[in-house]
Image (cartoon, rainbow, N blue to C red; front, side):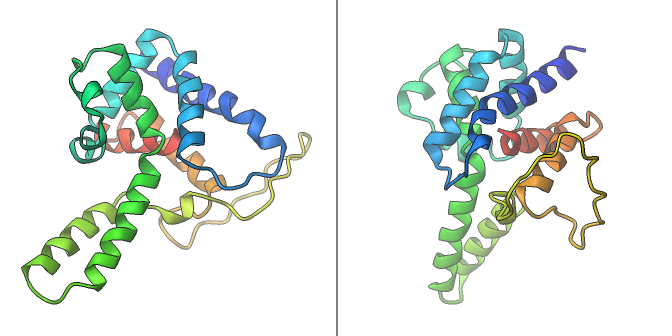
Length: 196
């Protein structure tokens, strides 16, 4: 029961933290914006919910490379159970989708500039691994969001691709994965990073 409450509280905290930004036109969102919203969400969670979220994130399939590998030395020196370290992991997770997007772009450029050989094969493997998690069309939606509180939601046509396009479709898909306890915990941890 705590798990469901924790997951729902995380989703609610993120939604509440983001709601003031929905009132006006949204422009580019950067690392600072992601970190601020995640910090507000973190502060709204109970210690048990914080532990649940960071325990889930510690099972992220790219935790060693993209979390511990990005961790400042002062944070890395703290025990894994330290609140400051846990807060850093949670807040960093909010920037992880952009980190993966940027890494995939960089590897793509390196791959294009590399001739045939073992270095190219290694870059292709790294890029293929990153692309499993990179969803470029999830970062934005170039459509205005207009909410009519009295209208029923429009039926959604089945997607032509297996991945939703645009944040308005991607966020519900990520929330569905996050709440699905039948999925592997690693997949749910990736979904949490996308929700944040």
